[in-house]
Amino acid sequence: MTLAPENFNRALDDLLVADADALDSKDMQRWLSNYVEEDDASYICLSRENEEQGLALGFMYDDCHARLLDRVTYITKIWAGTFQDYRTRHFVQRVAADRIDDNTWKARSNFSVFMTPEDSGVSEVLATGQYEDLVREGADGDLKLLSRRTLLDTTVLPRYLVYPI
Amino acid sequence: MSEQRDVVPGFNRSDYPLAQPRMESVYGVVFVTMSARTEPLLECLGSIVETLRELVGGDGRLKLLGYQKVRYNTNWKSYTDNDGYHAPLLHQAFNLLNWQGGKGRQFTSTKRGHIGFESELSVARGDTMLEDPSIIEFKGQDPSVGSRIVSLFPTFVATKHLDVINLRFATPIDHERVEVHYAYFAHADDDEEMVRHRLRQSSNLLGPSGLISMEDASIFHRIHIGNHTPGAAIFQKGVRDKEKIEDEFLQNDESGNLPRWEYYREIMGFERRAA
Image 1 (spheres, rainbow over the protein chains, first blue to last red):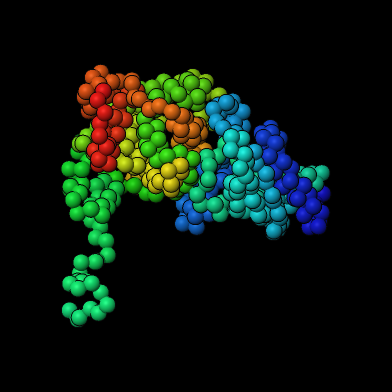
Image 2: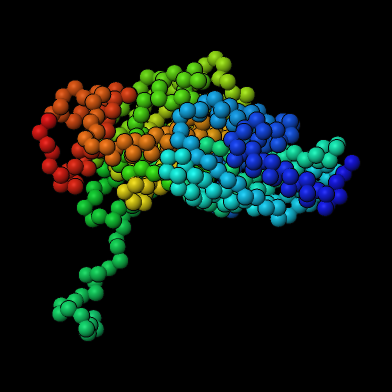
């Protein structure tokens, strides 16, 4: 079954919000479950400044499913207890989506992420930018991320990053 | 020169030029000074130039991979105290990945407070708990130049660890914030696979969201908070003679920070209190 565009938009919005909620809840298993279990599933976060200069370097460069698993391990095991934590709130808005083959869509959405460090309690913008996603449509019409490129308009981050944006 | 009106008598336009920077470069790293009194570059760097050469791939023929830019909530002096120097055993990632430190030395060159670290490479052994351990592989040729740090007064830090070549340009924003631009490089002779390896390792290991160093950033901030408590911070480990600033240190000695503070004290005109 393939989704009609209006149904796809609704399913995509559900996926975008599910991912934002997983990140804001710091539930890394739920974050991981939004990605397909394919070897080339990927999450890459880089500044638009690098991208526009043809530079591929990122803040996070998880270019295969094993790296996504390791991202979860970084946060839940390796880094646990070593940093001052902060809350995030993601606001995500779909701006464009196109089918590229029978079961894959290309989608672009805007995001802004607020953060509130536990120690200061002062909220500020952590980052803003766009997600460029490839989205897989499952047999029953469910959607998962195949790849996400998080392009940060925020050239200089106001803080070190623990969680994916 | 035409007569100048409405100015102080004797005004001469040539006494007010734009700033006159001087530039020199070594192994591809460009240095600029605004001061007419700065000594020639090689004299300013001293023997640390050799560490810098090894750090930038032996000849400085590098290719930019990109930047990570971030602000840290810390004073620039606590940043420089703690970015170049800290004991590797403090890194949780090293412990969990069974990563042991290699042999090494720490030294200063000239009286400008530069600090260099030279260490053999150590690679994680045994189970790493990572699904994709390729991220911490060493693909370079010579483990004896596996790890290098060059910290130049006042705020420049360059590091090479595994296959990451990283130059860090730090700028104080105010007394509570410092902005750091991490520039990462591949070598001009790298094949496509090596460039890709460096890109993955550089993006994931040593920066403000790196596997090993994310917690550094957190520690800079906590040390800055701690520095507001009464009393003075005192470097103890590695101090053998309270009257003397040495120029060779053991790898994990915090006394390696003293030459920089001594130079800072001198140029700021602060009196040294009796030990």
